[in-house]
Structures are given as structure tokens and as C-alpha cells.
Image (cartoon, rainbow, N blue to C red; front, top):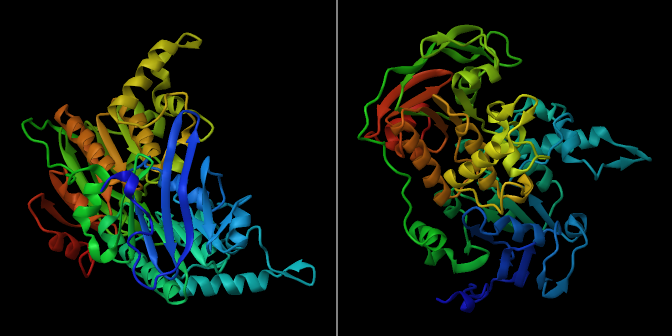
Length: 517
């Protein structure tokens, strides 16, 4: 079907009512055309899933529908009537709320205060904190979370913070709810709970717009599927007419391949050895989130760490990189113990980490794309009291090309990039330090299927050059991409180790997961 002929309402199922519609919507940022005449419809009590690679225009379209930004052309219809949203508050007052891909919580405030921020419950001229706490607790119960409403958000792990973000959106009682990558940091159990909430909302007539790079997962709740590519709608169909192959073909033009373990090179000696590493759990005396763990990786080898949320994957990687303190054990980089060194000193020695939370730990939002890329390598460009601009710009250009960042250039604001391209900046930044050992915590979080393949290809190329790689994932399918070995963590310990020719079922059984993802 030609792109120009695609209509967002052409394949609506009989009886389904369109409540929100974008007609020929376009949006430009300078010379970049993010959206090009897009048609998009949301049906009452249905889930419309929006698929597309990073930079395809998904988040831009959602920001327009939720009043955050204004379109450059086209119109928005709510219940059949043309509307113009003056702000996100205006859209929310009309029943449209959005759960953003990047968390927008205040870490120093409690769960309760984050949920009701900007729309506090007032009683007798004062904020009714008790009622807010009661409602926050009710929301946590609905989401099957044992989170105290008075807990500070900064004390929650990333998955729990995502739950708070979801609770805040649910508390508004919206008739149209936009979910932009809501499960990116959730465990399999938490995803099941969220999907139950989605089904309950549908039964109440709430319309859901759902964006996800977890394609198979998204198909479980999809009623309508829309695919964007380079700012244009390329496909639209009801759930009964689509499958995984249909989505991928329309997103990237062909079936994707996450790669295979790199071959044809000899592995070197042990580059990193983790010996009897123990990391105590925060705020839980006597409990170790990493419990006497030992693991080694050779130069030229790629090791995948798989485990459920809370298995200790992140804590192990952050301790090795110097972000968390251990209570015992050693971390040997090429035979030298680095456990007492700072993060910067470990980077200088050749040990780098791509963190799980790119917004909090990987990027400086006030810096440009280029400044973020060169930040970890800046010492290499210092000449006396000055920084060699030529050398720095050469590295920036090389990094943009190497990790395939879709940007107008190194001077672009980091906030102008899609979530996946921001993740590529973090990876490029750490690759630019020329590490001997590269640690990556959920490197595909928020990255589309095409970009995943590019990232894993980078890891394979690095291994062929002698780079030792450890990456963690909560997606069992990613264990089979480029890893030579798959190590399963369970409750802070290694429960099993496999080669790439194992099965999903064996990996998941070793992790304690009861059923296939």
C-alpha cells in the first residue's frame, strides 16, 4: 500500500468509536521534519499500539496529542471536534494523560507527593496529606506493589519508580491514557500486573495509546497497530491482521537479526575477574543483594548476565564499576585489584560502565550531543591549560558515525534526540574511552529492534578487537544475540551458566521464572 493512501480509520472494526484523531499532522524542528502528514486514530476502550524505530516520530506525535508541543500543520480532533491544546494541563483537563518514557519524578519527594504534585487534595484550605496517602496506598495496592507512600522516590529501584509514574497517571482518571514505554524497567511480574490494569481500564471505556519496543509483549494487549517510519505512517491494521513479522517488516523493511556470537578470533587471557564479591542491600541489614559472587571474562569474550528484577544484576555491575561499595571480595582488572579505586580511576585503567538509567547516570542534559560523547575522554584532549578542539571534534564525529546516532550534529541539544539515540550517546561515550572491559546494564532499554541489532553488532566488533564485554538483560531473547556465555543470577548468586545453544526454558527455569516471556 502506498504511504499516501494509508488512512488511520480505513481498517476500523465495526462498532469501534474514534475518540481522538490526528489528521495530516506534521511537525518540524528547524530543518528536521519529525512528522510528515500523519493520520492517527484512538478508539474508545481499545489499545492502539504505536510501533517504530527511534527517531520515527512516535514520541513527537504523543507530545502533540497530550498538549506538550504544538503541531506545525494538520489538526487534532477530540470526539469529532477540532481542538487546540494550550498545554499538557489543558489536555489533561480534557481527559488526556501521558506516561513518559523518561521518568519525570522528583527524587527527593515521597511517592505520595509525586503522585499528587500540582493537583494536591485541598480540605479546609490546607493540603489533606492523610487523604493523599490513603489514595496513594490504594493505587499501590491496585498495582500490587508493597511500596510505602511516604518512601522517597530516590530510595526506589528503577522499576518501582516506573510504577509510581504509572500510578500518577492512573490517579487522574483519564479517558485517554498514553503509555510511552511503560514496561521498559519492569519485571515480568510487574508487566503482568500492568497488563491487568490495562484490561480493567479498557472495560471501563478508557482508551489506551501504547508505545513499546517489546514487540511480542505489546501484541498481547494490542487492538490496533500503527507503524511510523521516518515521520510517516507506513502501516495500520487491527490486531487480527498482524503478527510479529508484519510489525518488523513495516518498521525496518526486513526481519531483524540481533546477531550471533562473534567467531574467527582468539580469546585472550582473563581481562576481568570478580572474586567472592559481596554487596549489602541498602536498608536491609544482614541481606546481600550480591552474595559471594565470582565470575571472569576473557579478552575478546562476551558474557550475558540474565536475571529477574532484583536478582542483583545492576548491583554487581555498579560495584565492579565503582558506583557501589562492596563488603567483601575483589575485582581484578588484568590481574590488578581495582576495588579501592574511584570510578574515574577505573575508567582510566580501562573499565567502563554503560548504566541502566541513562537520564540520571549517563547524560548531562545541559550539554550538547558532542559534549556528552567526549565527556569521559576529555583528559585525552587537554593540551596544557586548554582543550584541543580539533581532536575533540574528530572523536565526536567518529563516535556519531560508529554508533549510528541520528542527530543533526555534535552541537545538537541532547534533549532533541529520541530515547534510543540518547542511549547510543551513552554507549558511544564509554566506547570512546577505549576500554579493555565494557560493562553494559540493560543496553537495549528504550532501543528499537533496528538499533538493538546495531548495538549488539558494536559489541561483537569490539570483542573481535579484544574487548571483554559483560552485558545484562531482563529479556531472555537477548541472551542469544552475541553472547559466548550466558550467566543466570538468582538472589545475588550465579544459579546456572550456559552456552548460546541452550534454550529459553532452561534459562528462565534457572532464574526462577515460571513461564516463558
